[in-house]
Structures are given as C-alpha cells and as structure tokens.
Length: 183
Image (cartoon, helix red, strand yellow):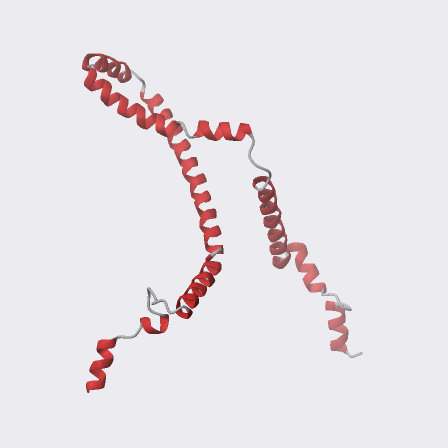
C-alpha cells in the first residue's frame, strides 16, 4: 500500500468516511434532518387522518356544530331588529342607544376582537373544507373525461348529430379554408 492510499485509508477508513463522521459532530447531516422532518410530517398527517376519518359524528359534535352556526344569523337578524325597533318606537330605541353610548371603549375593543377571532377561525375552517372538496372533485376528473369520451363515441356510432364539434373539427374555420381555396 502506497503513501497516498495509506492517507486515504486513515482519513476515510475502510468503508467509513471519517471526515463526514467528524463533521457531523459539529454540523447536522442535512440529508438525515430532511428524512427525520419527512417522517415527522408523515406521522402528523397520519394522526390528523386518524382523528378526522373516524366513525360518524356523535350527538355532542352535532350539537356543537349547531351552536356554532347560531352567531352569524343572530347578529344579522339582531341588526335588522334594531332597524325595526328604531322605526317602531324611536323613543325606546334612543333610550337604549344612550345606554350603549356609556359602554367604555376597551369593552368595544374586546367585543370586536372576540367577533373577529370567531369569524376568522370559522373562515379558515370553511376554507380548508372547501380545499378538501376541490381535491375530491379534481380526483374524479379522469373518470368524468372517460365518461365524456364514451358518450361521444356512443353518439357518433348511433348516428345522432353531435351537439359539439369533435376536437379535430373545433379548430377548423370553413370561411378561411374557402378563401384559401379561392386564392
């Protein structure tokens, strides 16, 4: 064994990479960190899937969902009710508004924060539900395309005139072809 081979064997060992192992003492292996991160992410997704893919929702879940649906209609109908009260009995309404004028400003800020967080959380939950619905719909696009092709084939074979031109005829411009033939 030569001098250079001896140095390489000392540095890299027999089948081992001594430099890499030494460097990993001071710096994390990026490939290993990526694998651990992917495993952690997969485990979290599996946990969420197990939580949300369980059996049907129970009575408690349905009751809580029903209660969560109440604030928006209550706020909307309450606001309309204020307009009706103002028109029906302006003196009574003005007395109530004088009482509201005495509410301190920090309490208004607190009410605004509570309503904002409630509707913000609901908006996020509904947005995520919408994204899941889109993904489910898009997963059926291939099936729908196949069904359309089958329907067009049936339509063409039965002699029924096509409602839409075939894709190869869709790009055809009869007037342009006629003009070119005349040239």
